[in-house]
Length: 333
Image (cartoon, rainbow, N blue to C red):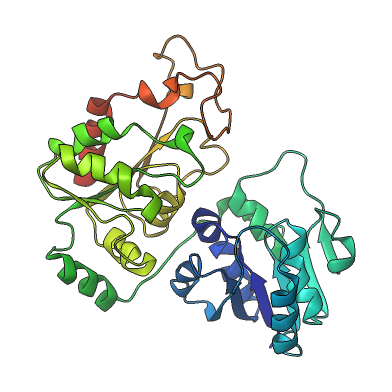
C-alpha cells in the first residue's frame, strides 16, 4: 500500500474542495495522511478516507525554515508519495525535506526542483474541485466530483444538546467571509431576514466575524452570535444538524454544501462559476446574471477584497425579501 502525505490548503473552503481528490487516492489503494494547519485540520477529520491528520506548527507568511526542516526530519522515511495542493514554494518544502521519493503538484513559484511530478497550471483554470482532483492522475469524470463530509451522529447530537436545539429546528447564517468585505452581504440585510424568521438563527464564523454577527444579533432577538465561540468541529456539527443555511461565498458555504444542507449562497465580487457550492440543494444568487437587474454589473466579478468602485452594488442591491423567500423555499424542500 502506498503511504501518501497530502499537504493541505490553508483555507477552509479550499480544504473542502480537496475531498474528491482524497476519495480518488483512497480508491487507488493509498493510505492517506493529511498535513494541515490547525484551523483547517477539522475538515479532514470529517473525511473517512483520511487515516491520519498531522497539525502543522506553521503560520501564514514566511518560509519558517527551521520548523519545516525539523518536521521533515521527523517524517523522513514515513511516506512513499506526497501531493502538494497549494501552489506556493513553501508548501513543497516539507515533502522535499522529508525525502519523499514521489512529489506531485502544480508548477508555480519556481519550485520545479522540489517536485518530481509536475502538472502545468491550466490557462483557463477549471473549477477548484476538478483542479485538485487532476492531481490524482485520473482523467475521467473530474467535472462531476462533489465534496462530501461526514460526522458521527453522536457528534451532531452533542453539539445540538449543548445549544438546547433539536435537529432541523433552526437555521444557520454565515455572514462573514475571510477574504474581505466585498464578499459580505450587508449585516443589516441579514438582520432583517433573521428578525422575521420563525425559528432560532445561529450566526457562525470565526472570531473575526463576531462583530458583524453581534450587529445582527442585536437587531434580531432570535439570533445567537456563536462566531468565535465554538470550535470548527462544533460549527460543522451545528451546520449538519440545521434545517437550512444562508451564507456569503465562504468556507462555511462549502461545508454546508458538503453536508448536503439546503442552502442559499450569495455571490457578489466572486464567481459561482469558479467556486460554486456543489450541492443539488443549493440556490445560488448572483445579480451579475440576473437579467432584470439594471444597470448591469459590468464590474463583476472583480475578485477584489474591497469594492474598487465604492458602491458594493453586487451585494447591497440584493434584497432581503428575496433572500428570505429563497431560504424559506429551501428549508421546506
